[in-house]
Length: 387
Image 1: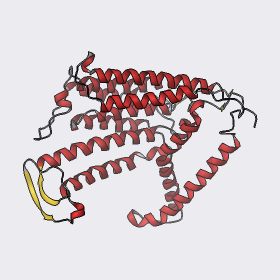
Image 2: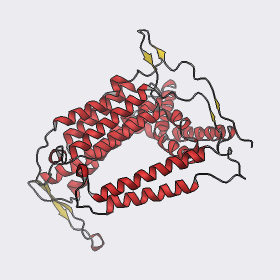
Image 3: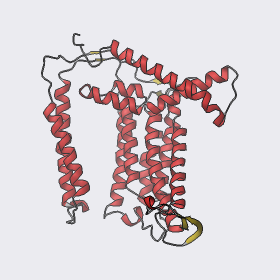
Image 4: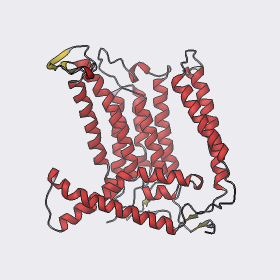
């Protein structure tokens, strides 16, 4: 198949206007993903439930104000349910199996003896306040990290994200984007199936509606996958590379991958006790240097590989001031949290001692971090909503 030529169609008006003259347009999906990943990273750095609750409130506010009216944008409710299930399951296992029995005893469950092959596991026993508080705080952090991913799925259009991936990483990024779009596509299928059932007079709700909804949703997902594969085949996906031409950028990408592995190993497995600049150890600075070189090699390899490809890009999604503002808000929020956990901030408040349990306090600068994460709800244009 001949190589496709780069052909960029005119984008037309990037933004529409509402009746009162405000700009209406969708923010680039990768800007939303960058903002959400910064929020998730900030949550992973602290165990203070007050800080985590502030960031979660900021994320939910942005989703409620900036999500479009597409079916895949309604996935926030599903992620909230998953977050509640995570918290409930973590508390259930802490109560029944335990893991931490120290502290003030709230009540005692009857103990059950297990066979020898399950030695080390105890069912029942005393349930302590410290154990429940530790499990609750840990579960809240994991649940809010999942909620940040759900926020990105509710705000970012998966089809636009697939269209905006770099040409050099098309093979990998196509699989990644399809995996990230799994939940939004399922949400859209569920809404279509339930709407069809309501139009036919079906009023079954709750758990009884699952058997009648599951099979049509699977059928819809299979049909959607076949249509996507057909359209990608028709547009020459995966066939734009000349087989006789050696592939460029291979050694850069492989070296970058080894650098990421080595840097991660130094960061996680090598102990560092000598403090350096900004309170980071020597091993941490060495890991940052290796990871920086790896990122540079990865960018070099992608650019070299991209010069070998010619792809069609029809009406690319605009990237302008709202996207830079969204990313900057996420980076500022993450930077504030990084400052708070360092020796210059309030590390004792951000990761308070939980054994014995102490009531958490809110560092004042954490409000600034939450304000940075919620700023895209007011600093970006409203999405286009069909009336």
